[in-house]
Amino acid sequence: MAKKAKKDPIFKLPPYKVEQLFVSMAETQDWGLKAFGIPNLWSRTKGEGAVVAVLDTGAALDHPDLKGQIIAAKDFTGSPSGPADVHGHGTHCCGIIAAAENDSGVVGVAPKARLLVGKVLGDNGSGSGVGIANGIRWAVDSGADLISMSLGSSDPDPRIQSAVRYAASKGVFVIAAAGNEGPGEGTVGYPGGFAECVCVAAVDQAKKVAKFSSRGSQVDVAAPGVDILSTYPPKNYARLSGTSMATPFVAGVVALIVAKQKAQGKKVIGSVDDLLALVKKTSVDAGNPGFDSSYGWGLIDPDGLVPKDTEPTPGEPGGAVIVLGPEDFTESGKAKFKGIKKISIELP
Image (cartoon, rainbow, N blue to C red):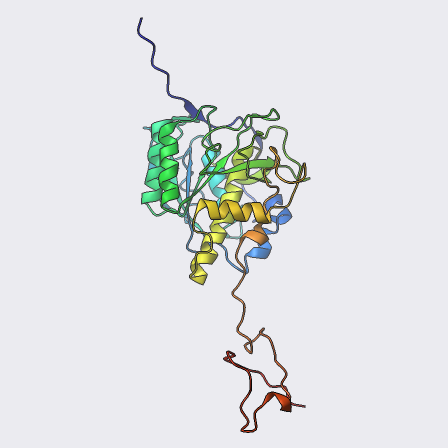
């Protein structure tokens, strides 16, 4: 008998539940933003110019916190609702990244970033490898600076890995969930398990790894993922938990990095290897000393990741003041220093 062809893996959302649902609220900063110092970074950047692709169940396109943030949306599932989100998961992820500052609802990590919405998971929360791979390539070709994916399968799909590598070759960062199959070891799913992705675990308000968070050698960093408040269809707000929530938090931080680099006109972090090296260098150690399978390199440190403002030129406001005395001048009155464009002279 001929061997049966191996079935394609089905990619789906990690198991999660809606903790609370809200119809409206005054603008709220969720606990993760405060605990990880995000508002302190907004004097550097709020994500202006960064484009984030969210590949998920679509988005509530008319949500007041999202409708001005979405620049394009496309369905890869054949859903009768098109790219609109009737599930809720994708809308929640979008809000964590870039919910707008508008005096109501919630605010995202990078509230001035813009979103590309790729619906790669159908209305039941599952999708095919080919649809996800096509979504990744569409995001890259549509100008995404980074891609956020809160979905997974226990089996790797070569088409998705090829698309992730395509993204990496174009300098597009891919942030992916570790999965909610913890606390057992070796439970990280894919695409999070691919080396070309930044693989994200979830922590609670005590900054302890969540019991559900998948463990494994592929985990890179941990971020807020328990009881997270964000946008929800059609124009509501909800609290959800999962590595699905931690992933867009990290994507929002990377959007701030990208935006600041664009504003400064220099690309210090140009590849996923650069980003992973910086994550390793800056993360706050948690769990066992050094790398471990629960936290990866530790808790994400947004302040250490997002570039600071350019150092001022000496003599300019905020620059160094050099105090010169008579011995610092030649007989003709010229300063003996070289290579200093501006000097502030402090007279007695």
